[in-house]
Amino acid sequence: MAVKFVIIGGGPAGNTAATYAARLGADVTLVERDIVGGAAHLWDCIPSKTMIATGGAMSFSRRIEGMGLSHQDAHLDLAVQRERIAVIENHLRSQVTQLLDSQGVRIINGTARLSGAHAVVAETSEGPVELEADAILVSTGSRPRIPAWACPDGERVLTTRQAYPPPEMPEHLVVIGSGVTGVEFVHMFSSFGAKITLIVSRQQVLPSKDPEVAAALEDELLRRGVRLFKGARAEGIDVTAGAVEVRCDDGRVAKGSHALLAIGSIPNSDDLDLESAGVITDGGYIPINHHCQSNVPHIYAAGDVSGKLPLSSVASMQGRKIAEHIMGIHTREHRHIDYEKAASAIFTEPEIADVGLAEAEAFATGRKIRVTKVPYASAAKAMINDDTGGFVKIISDPATGVVLGGSIVGRHAAELISVLALAVTANLKVSDIVESCLAHPTLSEALAEAAE
Image (cartoon, rainbow, N blue to C red; front, side):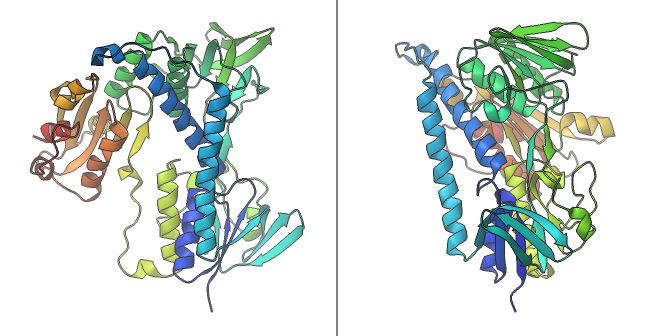
C-alpha cells in the first residue's frame, strides 16, 4: 500500500517534496491556503528580483555613455511593472501546479491543522476535509515581522509585501533594517531615483556578512547618496500629512515620504495545533534533525518554519531529502544537507554572493586558512562591460588546498558563486579550479586567478 503523505504548505519545500515523493510512489496530498508555489517565494522573492532587474536596467541606462552610447533617461511605469510581476508570478505558479498535477498530487485549497499524530484537517470553502497520514510535512513558511511600535497602513508605512511595487513611488524612503532584504530594497528604490535613509542597528550593513564585503556595499550606497543611521534602532513611526518620521533609540529622527519595515520574519506555525501531535516548537520554529524530522519522527518540517537558512534553494533541497527519507531512499546513497555549504546571494549593486567558511569566522575560531583575493578589474570581461568594481575572494585550507569558502562582490556574483559552491560541496582543491580551462573573455576567469 502506498505511503500516505500529507503536506501543509505548497512553497518550494512543499511542492518539491510532493513532486519527488509522488514520483517515488507515495500517495501525496498538498494543502495550500494562499498560492501554490509559496507566498514567500512568489510574493516576496520573485517580485523583489523582478523590480531589482528593472532598477538595474535603469542604473545601467545612466552609465551607458562609458560604452560609447548616448545617454537615455529611463522612467519607471508602476502600472507596467505591476503587470510584469503578475505575469511572471502567474507563469511560475502555473508551472508548479502543472508539475504537481502531472505527478498525481492532490491539491486542496484551504487552511490545514493537525488533529492528531496521523491526522490533518483541511478547512476549505466546501467544508472540512479529514486526511489520514503516514507522514506529514509542515512547510508553512513565514511572514514579515511587524513590531508593536509600527503600524503599517499600506500607504505611508509599508511591509515588504506591500512594496512590490508600492502604491506610489516614494520620494524619500526610510528603510528600517539593514539585512539582506533591507539592502536589496535600498538598492532597488535608489535605482528608481528615490532618496534613501537606511536605519542600521549595528555598525555595518549586512551584520552577518564578511566586513570587507559589507564595506564594499556601504561604499556604493554612500556613492548613491544613501544616508546611513548607524548604531540606531527604530522605536517608533509618526505619520503626518504626506510624510513619516522614524524615531530611533539614540534620539535621531529619520524623515521621509514613506517608511519600509525590513526587520525579519516570523514562522507561520500558529493555528496548526502542533501540540495535538506532540510536536515541540521553539520560538515558533520547529526544530529538526539532519533528516528534517521533528521530535515526532513521522512529522517533518522544512523551509522557513524549520528555522534553518531562509532560502528557497535550501527549502527545495529539504523537500527532496524529506521525500527520499519517507520513501526509504536514505538507506542507499544519501547525502545530508550541510547548511554551512549553502550558497547565498544578495541582488544589490554590486551583487554579493558567498558560500562556505567566511574569513572573519575562521579568524574568530582560530582556524588556519589561506585567503586569496583578486579584483574584478583583472578580468578583461569586466573592462568590456565597463563595470570593474568588485572582487573575488577564495578561502582554502593551506595544508590540503581544499576550497573552504569564498565571497564574490560584483556583476553576476550570484551566477559565479555556483563554481565555488560546487568546489566547497565536492571538496575540490584550488588546483582543480586553476586547471579548468575556462572560457575567455569571462568574469569567471577571476575565479581561476584567485585560485592561483
